Image 1: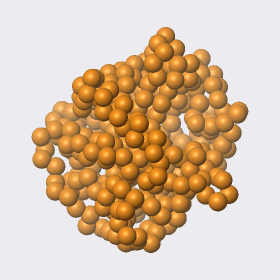
Image 2: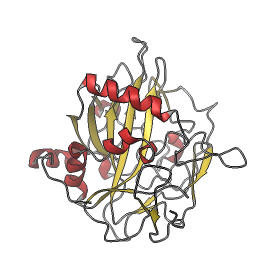
Image 3: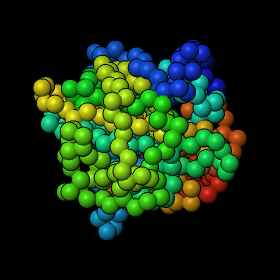
Image 4: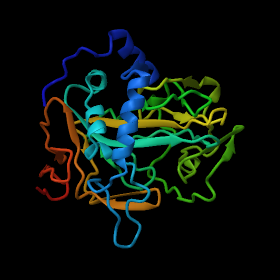
Length: 321
């Protein structure tokens, strides 16, 4: 993998603003009519899960709640998307030249849906109880860089994103604490006058100070039209508005998550477990999107089909070909 061409790197001012606020953008990746066409084709292809990374387990728990993870590993459009220079150059501006994409997720929001609760993540142990990413011991950094792209319009009325600038410098949650998965109870809970939830969890259970509340007076809304994206630190307090239902159109966001190659992904784990499901990591691999992997901590995906080969990397699951 060659280094980025640097045509879309953050300017010095944009980079300074990112370090101060914890996010940058929005930036335009696709024109609205372009992403509408591309997403329509990709959505049809995604219905075929025969090459998807996560499969159902024998006890039925399986990938039912993980099925939207990492489809960049089997879908051509998403595989191209996560390596787009307009994304990768900007990510490398923050993380350095050697970069992995370690996860992707879909975030649909339908008319009437609740907002997503305020949250932040340094290790992504929040829902499973064990770190999913691990920076080198003694590192002053943690978390990952999220690139959230609007595949449809994502305004405040349709469930657009919210950030509280500058909060990436302090962790307000302890990701080692237990958080109960209870989708029947943890839905549309009114918090500070807004219906919010967190995919079946109550993120408040992780608060270091049980009496603390996010200062929503400092929150900013980030409206995006279809085809735009924003990048932000996973440590930044972020949330989304409810979908007010003033339009019948859904909101669809797609996030790709990036870390430097020095970071260990799913260290020591053979499966991913969260949101009421679990699935084997046997078919999983990180994607080198920029630079070189000089550490060899993680398996690297070498293709985007079921026949892809994985090279053995550190403490990952066995290689396959």
